[in-house]
Image 1 (tube, rainbow, N blue to C red):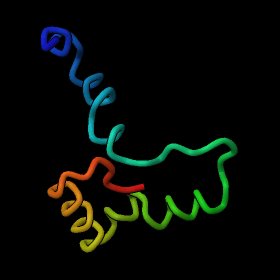
Image 2 (image 1 turned 120 degrees about the vertical axis):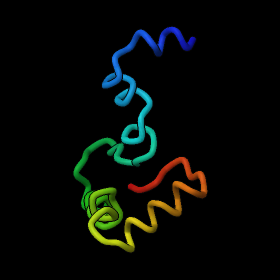
Image 3 (image 1 turned 90 degrees about the vertical axis):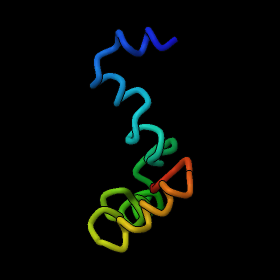
Length: 72
């Protein structure tokens, strides 16, 4: 199985199983944009968390704790 990963370029490996695909909850249901889903992502999303030192601390704590999903 590892020989398959070695034959795939690095940029594809990041997209397939990297941080940005598996750990951020951005899947919109049915008829996006529903107002509540948009509000949830704008308030608790990855970009919003990365804007402030406290938000970055929240993300780091979730990473260190081993959470599967880091943010919305």
